[in-house]
Length: 377
Image (cartoon, rainbow, N blue to C red):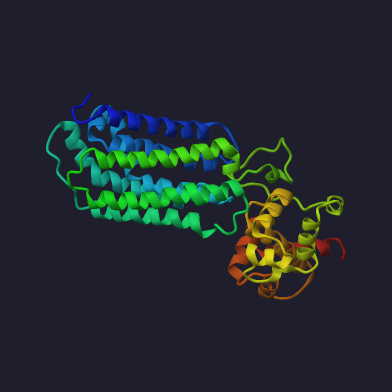
């Protein structure tokens, strides 16, 4: 055992590593939303790498290729935190080149900043100290941490899945805030002798957050935390393959609506007859006030009875349903239809329309008119 590695420190790191391995195995198992699981697993691995990277004595015990891999994961950990936050709270999350390039850029910057120091450590030579890229790497780490906190906060109000809202409130936000504080402290004492206590407190903090997430998963199941509540399967048969993007919930059949609860009937009336979705900037709170019910009750109603995970998806369904019908039958400008259906500008309307129908509103209008001409209408 290296002289500067204390038994209690190893015990603490081993315990935290065990909790993180529990999460990694859970995420690595086959299941729905594989892209999300992969992002969360990558962040978990980066935390495992940090447990080694934070203690120089442990790094010297690793084979050289593994040591460099650990360094790469450790120095890019906030990029994986950002990707994990995006994945967990965006139902449409997919891996793409811009996201991968951002993570790869931080990884390359981290390696360029720290490989000379790791080389010196493995060779037993003097530490060369921080290099010219170190401030840039630190700034990038802070930037990714801020971006991760923003991902947690930006769609908080629209999230309809209660276990995921709990994860957002207590775990994900805690990870982001704790990472920001820990990074600030680490940068402040980077070149100062701190002894074993401060690093141990940092490891304990990671362990507490990981333990909280483990308890949340144990209580609700991983699928629930990922936003896959039992009602989320509406409109999807059991033999359909799971995809990275959850399926669009099917409309409630008339027969089911007739026997639905009074609250659900009132909601359907507000959307179908009163066209409440046309109000620009409609939120869960304003719709709940309009219906005379609490926000929590409305979220549960839309999520558990109709299968939507996000309030914006619920609004897009009703807005695009009207917009597509009007595009096929009216000659009004597309912008006019978009504004009358509740969109504040043409950009969000075009993005939502393309995501739903796989084509632009202009292409959709031209296609429906061509089909009507062929049918002699």
